Length: 347
Ligand code: ADP
Ligand code: MG
Image (tube, rainbow, N blue to C red; front, side, top):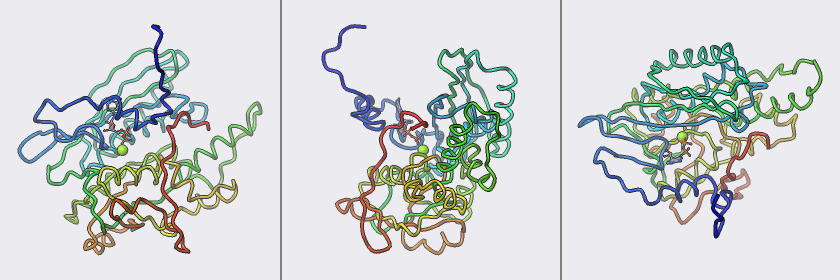
C-alpha cells in the first residue's frame, strides 16, 4: 500500500461522522430521488401519489452475531427484521427483500437450510417476498446483506426530520430486553466454556427471544394507518434510545426531554438487570437492537395515541437550543449521549 501522509482513525469520526465524511460530495442527479442518505431508508418516486422505500443492512459474524449461540433459523428471521424494520420506520409497508450471503467453509448446507427456514417464516409473517440476492464465498465468517423495498402513499411517508417543539415522543413496546438477552447469552458462554453443562436460561426466555428473534413493528404502521395518523417524525430503535432520539433531534433541528420513569421495561429485563448489577436505564439508552419504533406526534394527537394502545408517551420535543436530556424523577437533567462506534458485540 502506498505510504499515506496523514492518517485519521475511523474511531475519531464515529460511524455517523464517517458516513457524512464519505458521502458529503454526493449531489442528487435524479428527480426521482425524494429522500437520499440520512434516514432509515431512501424514498424514490414511483408515481404521482406513491413512493418506493429502500434500505440496506449488513450483519457480520463476530461483530453482529455469534454463531456459537445464535440458532441459524433465528438469524434468518432477524436478518429479515433488520431490513423491514427500516421500511416500517418510514411508515411504509415492506413488499420485497433481496438477500446476499458471504459463506465461509465452516457453514454447512444444513445450517443454511435452517437459516432460510427462518427467512421464509419471517417473510410469510410480514407478507414480504424474497425476490433475489447473491451468494459468494467468505474468508472471514458469515456475511449477510439484506435489501428491503417497500411502498407507501407519498403523503404517509415519515422522515426523521419533521419533529416540532411540543410534539409528544411516543414509543412502542419496551426497551433494553434485547441488550439483556445478549448479556445473558454472553454470560452463559463464558461460564460454560470448556464444560459440557447446559446453559441456564429459565425465567429469561422473553429476553432471548427479543435478542435472537425480534419482530419488526409493521403492525404499528397498520395501526397508524387505521387511525389516519401520520407521525411528524419516526425512527426504528436499533442503536439505543439515546442515539436514536439524537438522530431525530439532529434531523429535525430540535431538542428533547425524555422522562426516565416513563421508559417501559419488561419484568424480565428489570429482573436480570438487577441480578447482573446493570442499570436497566443504561440498557435502554445504550443497548440498542430493540426494533421498536420511536415517533413524534403533535400534542393534540394524544388521545388517538392512547386509542392505539401499547404505545407510551415518554417525553416531548423542545427547541433546538435547549438540547436533549433525560429527566430524572427528582427533576435532574442528564444530557443524552450517543454511544461510540460499535466495534464488536463482545465488549
Ligand atoms: P439504520 O440504522 O436506520 O439502518 P444507518 O445508521 O445504518 O441507518 O445509516 C444511516 C444512513 O446512512 C442511511 O440513510 C444509510 O442508507 C446511509 N449509509 C450508511 N452507510 C452508508 C454507506 N457506506 N454509503 C452511503 N450511505 C450509507
Ligand atoms: Mg433504522
